[in-house]
Length: 470
Ligand SMILES: Cc1cc2nc3c(=O)[nH]c(=O)nc-3n(C[C@H](O)[C@H](O)[C@H](O)COP(=O)(O)OP(=O)(O)OC[C@H]3O[C@@H](n4cnc5c(N)ncnc54)[C@H](O)[C@@H]3O)c2cc1C
Image (cartoon, rainbow, N blue to C red):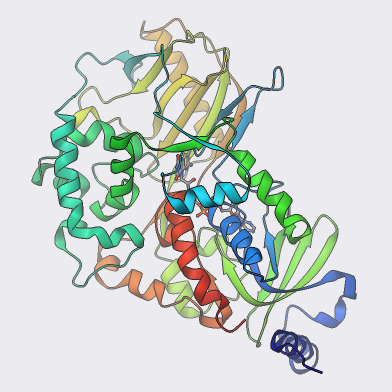
């Protein structure tokens, strides 16, 4: 009889964990679990957002057994579609669009979700430029030569095409990549591109002070090229969450929603995880794990981090990014109020504050995106959003009323960055060297970019390494 190598390894894992590990040293003792509560898989994926869901579907399609753990009651991460309970109308509060690429199209086709192109333009909407510090209309909003600025941006970007695939930096890191982005804009005559770049760099914190590397990673070459070609893709039915609902259905019992990882033990041949699910505690035994959640030390309390991991992840800091849907604003349905600095370079708005308050596409409901340099408490963000709406009235800009929140969500932590000296010192080289150690792989925005299409491509490349030896 031929016994499959994977079964041999799994058996070895179970017996090693059950017999060799001294009980007092392991947080997870398999002997404590009934067989129905032990889940054995090739790969356990933690985090059911863009990267984790992609990995789970692809690995399953490649014939590997998977389990995907998501702490929220649904998959999708930053993809959140708001449905009006009154009439079923939908609007995207998070992710809007993907690139026109074979990889994107194949993934949507696999999950039977049709795509269409989007121009991002809402017809019949007029922009009111306002400085949300005062609520006053900004008379002379900066506008430069967009075409010249974007051409210069692309020309400069061509020097760093390796950034398109990850943080595959060259060393010494080019000094330009370490400049504050405001200095880089001046140096390469990119002023005309700022209004466009700014929109795509939402969530990056202070745009002009941010390290150029991160600005380039967020507004990458593909963004500009898809914009110029008008080829960005969105869901035909205007329901981006459908992708993740379909993925959940394909994964079926291999996805555990509303589940929390309590502890992970990577000391053995396989990885053991203790999970709290709606059906009680489960023990997962996996040959490999893939983490796709923001790798902040405080987010990884369940993991047996070693000193190197702690030292690396401890250098990350995050910006704050929040979204809301408001009713009762008093703002007409054809007016978008956009934040601009009355006295700042390129009229870049001052944060923390809303980027905009704009018609959601559902009559009477307005979509807000709000950002800060560092994370803020939700109650403070909400109070500031209400105050921003009311300032419009006190400044005589619009006859607004006190709004209500029909939806609010925090996307924080967002845009994980490290200091310049860490980048220079090889932070990303050291970060990437963690891949595969202790049967652990990593993906997600911190490892590449806040960009779903790019993250799927990054994750796809990683699959070969994950699968090797399974
Ligand atoms: C408002 C907004 C608009 C955006 N628009 C676009 C866009 O148009 N196009 C685009 O390409 N990108 C867009 N992005 C960026 C894009 O959404 C992100 O780059 C992408 O979602 C990141 O994927 P990820 O897998 O790293 O993380 P996420 O999608 O955030 O997934 C992480 C998941 O892990 C879960 N999780 C966290 N901790 C745990 C834990 N301990 N256990 C289990 N699960 C856990 C989270 O709940 C989440 O579901 C937007 C982002 C925001 C906030």
